[in-house]
Amino acid sequence: MNILILSAGTRDKVVQFFKKELKGEGRVIATDCSNLAPAVYEADKFYLVPRITAPGYMDEILDICKKEGVDAVFSLIDPELSMVAEYSERFKEIGVTPVISDKELVDICFNKYEMAKTFLKHGLTTAKCYLSIEEFMSAKKNGEIDYPVFVKPVCGSASLHINKVSSDKELEGLFAMYDDLMIQEYMDGQEYGADVYIDMLSGKCTSIFIKKKIKMRAGETDKSVSVHIPELFEQISSFVEEVGFRGIIDIDIFEVNGKYYFSEINPRFGGGYPHAYACGVNVPAQIINNLKGNKNPVTVGEYGDGIVMMKYNETMIKDMSDIKLIP
Image (tube, rainbow, N blue to C red; front, top):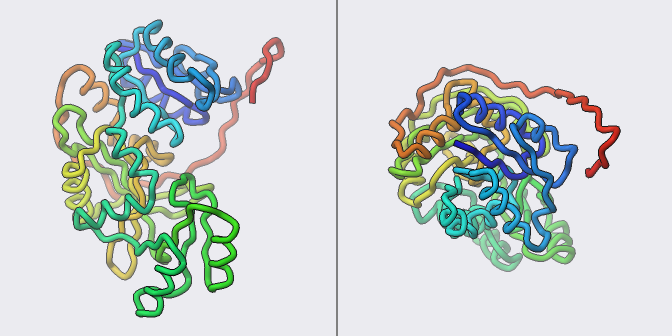
């Protein structure tokens, strides 16, 4: 069984986990547009590919799948997820399973306004959102919301271009500078992350790992501690099954005054997933089990409390004196 990990970048742990869980019964192949992406050197084989925006990029990925006898493919970066989902049928035609939800769902995940509407539609609490200054001002006048607020791109990832705004002047300035912005209720509370797996065969939510975020860096969890929140286990399981997610997803949640607000969903391995794996929430094994045609048992919440993740820097040194460096 061969697994293709696209845009592996610095996510060496994910590559290592799949190699370990394959137990020598298959290979992990990795791609990246840079030969300075350390994770690719953890794989059994590495392909240097063009940037995802290059013409014919996905055709090149399909060719790699055919050449290497790939059984499953997934990406680790947001901009590529919709592309993989869009080519889902093309992958299946050559016997490759894309580990991704349907394209419609993936696209909703990257439209923060549509994601908020989806949360509300399925009975989950989320932050108030507005697409225009006029709509926000009307709600403010009615006492529904007040400063501070977040102003962010409707579509975006990695916490880029998010601004905390405290006045009309700041708000109007940002809307004058940028297009496609939205205004969101400011969440001043404790943030949690949930690593969730939805069985690709049964559609059942088979595992949830909840971590309390202690420190963030560049939009990713830097330090966290494992916790059990039964209310969230129930809400997440019902939601992801109703909506129809498949595979691995990462959910951001805020707790404000004892109430949980669902914020965002990333339909991929989250940057903090190694915490879940270390606690025994083994998503690579579940993926491999699905690829073998087996459904996974429900093991939601089967991990210990109080287990802390602390990220730290690692360094890879490699002699590339005879190779052209592609950053």
